Amino acid sequence: MSTATSRTGDAVVPYDDAAARYDVVIGLEVHVELGTATKMFDGAPTVFGAEPNTQVTPVSLGLPGALPVVNRLAVEHGIRIGLALSCGIAEMCRFARKNYFYPDMPKNFQTSQYDEPLAADGHLDVLLEDGTPWRVEVERAHLEEDTGKSTHVGGATGRIHGAEHSLVDYNRAGIPLVEIVTRPVLGAGARAPEVARAYVAALRDLLRALGVSEARMEQGQMRADVNVSLRPSPDAPLGTRTETKNVNSFRSVERAVRYEVSRQAAVLDAGGAVVQETRHWHEDTGVTTSGRPKSDADDYRYFPEPDLVPLTPSRAWVEEVRATLPEMPVARRARLQGEWGYSDLEMRDVVNAGLLDVLVETVAAGASPAAARKWWGGELARTANAREVEVTALGVGPAEVAELAGLVESGRVTDRMAREVLEGVLAGEGTPTEVVTARGLEVVSDESALVAAVDEALAAQPDVAEKIRGGKVAAAGAVVGAVMKATRGAADAKRVRELVLERVGAQG
Image 1 (cartoon, rainbow, N blue to C red):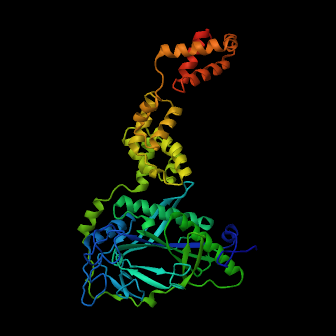
Image 2 (cartoon, rainbow, N blue to C red):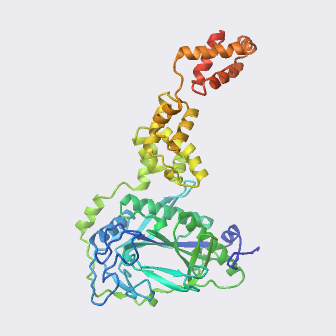
Image 3 (cartoon, one colour):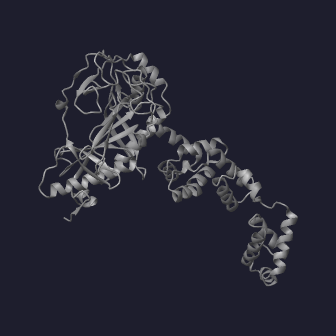
């Protein structure tokens, strides 16, 4: 079997070959920063981007004698997430100390949940790009606190090895997290990378719909740990897994799975054994590198947190939270597809392009669903691709797109003119209506002016006029083109053709 060498020097085999010969098993652990004003166990603020070490208290810093107090809203957010994932909510659960030393964990332990999570035994149904449904089983969703952030200065990799010195920012230490852990995803085969990506994307949509987190992966508010293992066949015991830490984009989740499958297959092909370890993902090169041996639960010496009483969410509270759950994303998409009359393929394209919310706003602003999809998924998407930005970052909003669609619908501008109007809006020349006025782009609606333009074009092309009279109606296109040129595209081409045929006495 052919092998190659990655940029790290690791042997890899082509992904398709690896997936054909081994059964791919994945699992995902997603950490979500909850959108609370204060931290999990103290009153320090949680504003992103503040000056280092300005959002801390004695509890955040783990100072002697500082006692934690549980953030009620964080618990409520955890319940919302658990319910939305169809999990059971524990009647009693407790926090534990997860003991390990690292500079960004000031207490030398993380307050988390171990054998008694807040929520357990749920699932999330996702759709793959071709519309295939897939259910990902969720083992647990538990509460914990985030760590601080270490910055390693000097060296070539930005990691601690080879660095000249390290800086630690404890602003993030203690921010509330929910960690959502899947069960092993079995049976995905070669589509495992796609399933992983679809799951993380669907989970982000769910979290945003719930209002518990902005889940902005670029800010670290949502981070995925990607577990991958291979086994010779689906009926064999699970293989040794690796855990690629802190992957922070949908595309990278998919790429990390693909790379690890290719790398592990090469190890097994050579008669080696996969090492159970954490690995680092490198976005620039698309490879993983070894981090440290992966610890088992016993290595963390979990024991109940003595400074916190158990959580006992009342059934009444849980039901109150359940009653406030919004429409779930999958149900919302199905409803909107029915209301808008989109085909399955059209709806998938909208969702995959991340356009659903902006289309909802555009339709609410007065555009038809067809027009909203046409402009956002067409001209605006092409412009965004050319500029290498998100389509929603172009500076054009739903109100402007709805106004543009209305100008076309009313007949004030043609589609071709509307594209020019859009160029003006993108260039900062004003609203669509203002651009129409400033550029003089409005359709010529004066019938007498159109008749004059047609007569002039016919007079300039007498041979064409004779052909039309002789029954060659297709020749009218030359006259229509001349009129459109004379009016700078401001005429209705359909009406111009009708007038051409009328003026020469031909039948269309």
